[in-house]
Image (cartoon, rainbow, N blue to C red; front, side):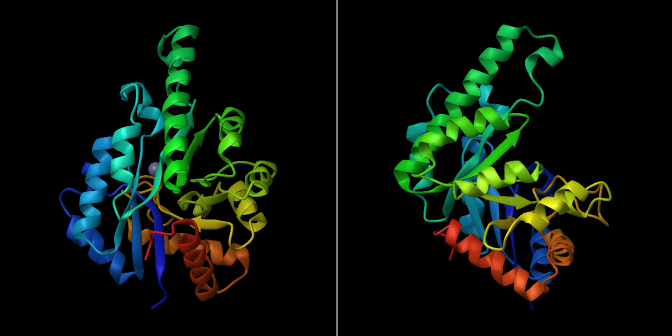
Length: 268
Ligand SMILES: [Zn+2]
């Protein structure tokens, strides 16, 4: 069987509470051999690590999502460092900036927006620092914030690397990311009818510069669109990407597994 990795899943979410063993069994039956469970805050990091201790195929990324940054304590570095030293903590994240839904969209003021962005930047900065210190790479969440984010990573670009997860930007932005040696990863959006811009980006991304992911429970690929997503569905994403890249599933599996091991050295 051809092995596939799901490099971005949220297995600690309550969505899987009822049928977790079946979700893992379906993943294994589809050939998925490794899953990285991505955390969204420190509690979620602990849950992801607990899953990684229980299941050989599961690894964790530990970190704090920008959309929850306003709930973070002033300094998460000490706790994050401890969590990141776990043998199965393969990355920091997901971390970054998300300006998609600012407080002003819900009646807040311009000052509220500035404070919200400032807290996101602080929590992101702390994660870039810890990643650099511990020589780990980062799983990057970016939404409507590309220029600020790209500026903030500059001082760290030679100390850590990031993968821009759920990449959905232009080919020009893709080139910017690749030019500093960072990577992208693609989700089930690549299978959507209206996902041609993503397929164009995939076509422009060389092997070795991208990985594939479900971002489950979100973004189920066609033909499961609209349903709860799960790691088994990463196979549909591989099939579409193989068609776009005009390569075999075997080649795509080998290239993306190699990229994952190189980017996440603690994956074994
Ligand atoms: Zn995610």
